Length: 151
Image 1 (cartoon, rainbow, N blue to C red):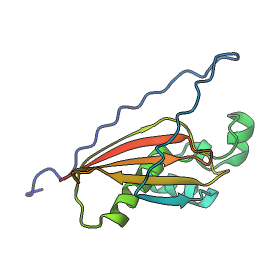
Image 2: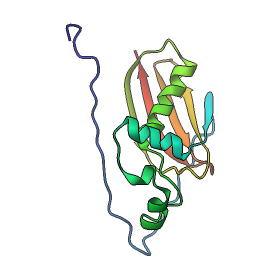
Image 3: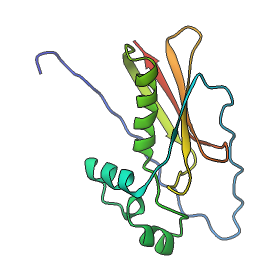
């Protein structure tokens, strides 16, 4: 519009081959211990279905329990990576409501499922110019790592 560009979004999505039987499983990385803020999220099928509808995501791993457990072999419904990122930004907004995010980047490192609560956490930098954000699974492992740079 007349005000110029409002948002630029770039996605670098990496799809990996399924691991072969017997392939070593890398150990999970521990989530950071110190967080200024945290919020527990208990995902359920309604939340995941609604987020799928909101984002026009028709992939059954997010809403069809029978499919995801019997065909795909996951232990439960898969929590959307972008939903976790949205929850991380929401945590920032709840704790720094006046902050203006200039740049946001995130990386999913381990899947989350609707079978257990997870936490979204944040720690502002000492200079106040950025916020480290992360999602931690019920076992304390890092599920998503993110950085928000503030204007």
